[in-house]
Image 1 (cartoon, rainbow, N blue to C red):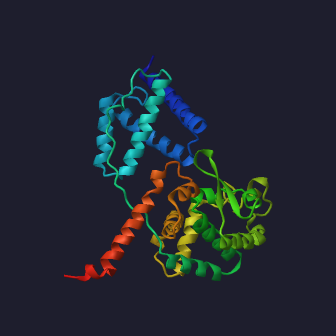
Image 2: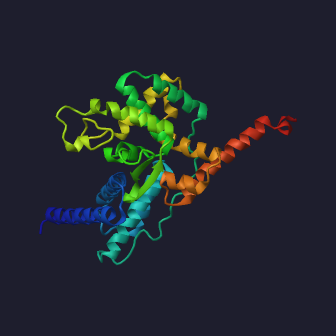
Image 3: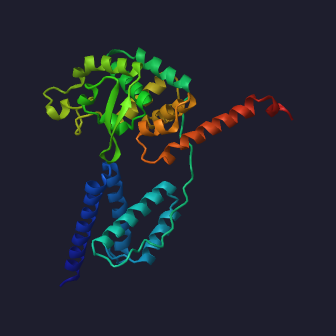
Length: 316
């Protein structure tokens, strides 16, 4: 058989194995769409590296995976990117092992990169007040929608993908709560504050303005409909709107994003006496260790307060 046919056959097998792996992550582990896309890109990057060196994704040896890891580290990629690539490799080769497509796991001896623990960016409560006041003054239906997005992000701590992907039905049940489908398809109840309920009600009264002409059920089912392919407002557009709001409020737009509002929600709750377990449940964190990062934020804030305000700190 010609070499070109061999290579085509190998590529087809490799593609089938990769597709089967990604389908397993979706069906059995409930992996998010963004996670699937990231893993697909990571493994495609690895496949390109291996092809140049005469190896395939399915049959790669441990030594060349070490080379790949070293090459990625030399490019000064972020530790979290390196960690995600390693996770994609490990899960893929363990899948091949479980399927009988390999007799070994070539990633068993690979070292994980050291991850720092950067503290999340936090907005002060005064900054949030300025944003809300600016959103309230924003004219027309655009202002109603912007205020609703802001109030709901800050009042619930939702991930932006969870918020823009809310069906209209989620806002038509008990007005005191939202039923949110989070990572892995897990559902959780999130309470809505009175200001968030008011902003939501005002937006619902003008929501029809944002329905594209002739829109069908695909668009009409979303709480935040849009003309885009998904039928609802995108994460990117929501982020852009918040940066426009930050500029209007006199804040640095680089400091504001939907995820920063999620951090602010958690940190401000803890500042006002909320318990960590309740915050974990509202954020939808599977592991409370993820939520504990906000206790580090509190500790850093208190340290700075003591250093600047305590009488003993002023002594030379």
